[in-house]
Structures are given as structure tokens and as C-alpha cells.
Length: 427
Length: 147
Image (cartoon, rainbow over the protein chains, first blue to last red):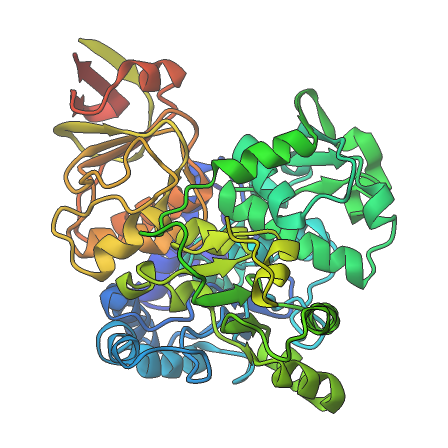
């Protein structure tokens, strides 16, 4: 790799041993992928996936403390993934003891570290930092040093920014150094599609199911998806962006997709069309039967697969303002049709702190959802469920990411809405 | 006995028993419960991976196509290495992915843990090696499988 004079000086220790090791790490990272140079990080803000102060992750916090003690901080402010705890989310006494006394004992001190390193503000904890209310929305072509698989795939695909699927810690190193190795999704060639996905469903496919099917098939490749125009249109409006948020998260967590193109919709597909498809790209045809097959392949690891759901999470990745509105309308109508006033399963919707603030300003909508018994939280449900006690709990979700990493059982959005408003959809 | 040649990401030599996954190795899903609750055998917690679910991973020659899933993956590998709970080596049939590379490189630069990492061993490697076989990693990216 060719380094600039300034980069070489950093590697040689001009700014101390820690900075030298940060640059060494970035150089080795680039070398593994044939990068020939570093390129400047051009986005205003970074984003880190590490938002949790888990006792077992002490080596990470010790590393960050080493950097802070050496006077190192990020060259750009950054947002961070959601926090793992929220007292408003239903939990038992034992769970609270496990959360606060065993698992997340480092939370408070880690949040202090994040502030020292350059966290944007106290509301910057969200996995969906690209939402307008949050304010970390990069422009097309900007180079990012982000981690968080759902945010990276959204930034690349929907916003047209350029970011590799960086790991936690590496993303912080890029934000500290102000440069990242140029390879993969940072290059024109790396953004070309290895797969063509032809969607031939009769009805609009569930975003989280379609994304799951594609992720499991293409793994870390770039898919070019055809056949979605009739449902998503050709403009990236609120509805399309919300769909793609959930779709992308499933491609990234059920596989390792960092970028997808949607024919006629996402920025590069709109400009470059099928010239984005590599010669010899493989083809994957998805119809309703294939989606059914994929959904039925998900293992159910509840002890009693007929258990009555005890908790429902929706919003992984965190919901948009539009989703909060839509779900309020749908739940209200379904509860009314069933002669009920409140949801019959304890239910948590998650959204970014800034979205929740905007939501609460709309007093009537917020009150309607609240009166149905739904908790709106900025928590990370994945972190909440990251303990053995939750394994014994019958948690349901419409998030394929949450399903992948926890014992939560997946249902489509329609099925979830039926379950929590009293209709018996659990089989 | 069969020998394969790959590319060295992190140097080192070792001999260990193979643990083979044919699907992508989801680092977070595989490690999260084991490291959080101090499982000494570091059993795989990824329910979606029938090849290695509930099998001990510590000290094994982890043979895989690539890693998938959350971008915490590299940080998890770094933590696993810092805690001395890493596999004996990681042997990729394909080119290494960015998350696994991050974890391997972070561990190499910032910890004393030894975990040779070799990639580009080819599909034939993953077809040949079976869980339980003896695998030896030599200098220069040679990997020998004893059947």
C-alpha cells in the first residue's frame, strides 16, 4: 500500500505508539483486500456499532481507555447503536438483576468513554442514524467509516454513500485516523452486482422475508433486484425507504450483504441500470413458494413451540416515524374489530430517541398508541434479549435480524399484528 | 493426507482438531452466549448453523467458507482472542471477509494471542475436511488434513 507522507509519519510513530498501531491495523486491513491507498473519510459523522457496556467485553473498553489516555479521540463526531437497557421495557426482577449487576456493569463507564471519543450527543444512540430526525445522513459518494450492518447496507444502497462492512473498533479507527483503505464497496468495481434476483411474487413480498431469502442465497455478494417497481415505485419516498431499511437489515444479518441495487429505484441502479451487473452474474428467482420455504426453514427454539407469546418486539432496525403512525392505525383498527382496547401481548416498538421525541410531539397519535398498551422505547431489542433468561421467554418479532441472533420467533408483520390484537395466529 | 495452500492473513503454525461449517460462520450468533456466560468449552450458539451448533469451538481448527452477520463480528473475535478463548486457527475456503479480517488483524496487532488465519484454501478444502479430523497449519499457508 502506498501511504502519503503524513500517513507514513503516523505509522512511524509521529503521534505516539497507539496512533501508530491504529494506522498499522488499517494498513493490514487494507492489505488483506488489495487496497493500494488510503482515502479520506468525507462524511460529517461516523457511526459505531459498539453501544453496550458488557462486562465480558472488557478488553474492548481497556483498548479504548488506552487510546483516551494517549490523548486520542475521533476526528469526526459519531452516532452509536442503541443502548441495551430501558426501564420502560417489561422485565422481571431477576432480569433486572442480571442486566444491571451481571451483564451491563460497564455501561455507565463506557458511555463516558464514548463522550470522550466524540459521540454526537445524548440522543445519538440508534441503529438507524440515517433517519432525518437523527441527522447522520450521508450524501451520495461520501466515504464513511461506519459499522452496524443494517446502517452500512442502507447508506450504501439507498443513500449511495460508500462504506465497507467494517467491524466494530475498525470503524472507530477509521474515524480517528480520518482515512480508510480503499477496497471493496469503496470502488466502482466492488459495487457491481454478482447476482440478479428476479422477484416474481403475486403480492408485495414482506421486506424482512425477501431480504432474508436474498441474504442467505448471495451471502456477501452484491444483488441487483428486479421486479419490485410495482410495489416500491421509482422514487425513494418514505414508504420505499422504510421498506428498504427492513429489507436491507435482513440481507445483512441473514447473509452478509453490504450493498444491493433495486432496479429503477436506488440511486446507482437508476443512473447506471443493468450496466451494474457483472458478466456471468448468477440468477436467483424468488416467488411466493420460495418465500414460504424460507420462512418455514427458520428453526423455532422455544422450549414449548405452542407457548403463548409473552413479549413482542417490533422495530429492529428501529422504526421510522411513518412506521409508528402506520402501526398505530393498524393496531387500533384490529383491536376495534376484535372488541378489544389493549394489545393482548406485552409489546415494545423501538425507535431512535430523536424519532420518539418527534412522535411524542404528535400528542394525539402518541396517546392513541399509549392507550393500547404499547411501549415505545429506544432500546436495542437484540441486546435486551442477549441473555439465557430470555431464551425461556416466548418472544415474537417481525425482525429477521432479531430472529437470527436470539430465540425470538419470526412472524410476518400481518401475523404479528393479528397475534397482539387477540386473533390466534400462532401455530 | 492431503495438503492445501492458501494465503496467510495472520502467520503461525498449529495442529488441531477440525470443526467444519459449510455455511457462513455467524460470529456474533456463534459466540455471544458462550463468552457472556463464561462457557469454558465456548460452545457454538448459532441455532441456524446445524454443522456446529452446540459444538465446542475453543482450540479447534475452525474451517469455514467466510463469516457472516453483525458488524460486531471483528470486535467479538478480538474479545475472544483477548480472553484466550479463540480457535486454534481459522481456515477459510474463500477470500476472507472484512469482519473476520478485522478481528484477526486487531488480535494480531493489539493482543498476544496466537491464531493463524489462512484464506483462499478453495472449495475442495471444505469438501475434504470433516469435523474431528487432524489439521496442521504450516508456515507459508500450507494446511494438511489427515483423514
